[in-house]
Length: 136
Image (cartoon, rainbow, N blue to C red; front, side, top):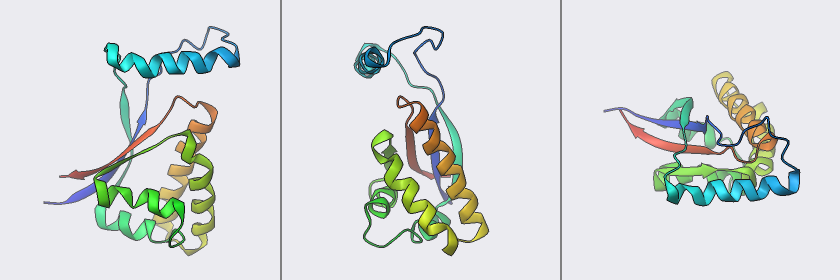
């Protein structure tokens, strides 16, 4: 049995972008969507990145030891899954950028893919990532 780590990204929003919602009110809309999960609203996630489990562990070992970013990413082996949201964007982006020179080309490609996902979160705070350990 092989293992992998899967990054899933929120692929569907429940907010109509055609509505010109003022920025102040948009946070209220996001909150309403969050509590809406109790009312039957379902998040649609899509696989955005898949890494073999051992390769994932090697990749995150390139992040600075003891850093908040490394502890966050080590949550996958420890707990089986993590959530990455707008609160983690800057911290992870800085750590990934700093680690790139020490990474293999494959790890650099994964870092860039994750940086692209983080940028999407930065642009649209309702987006988040669910990162899970999968047993194939």
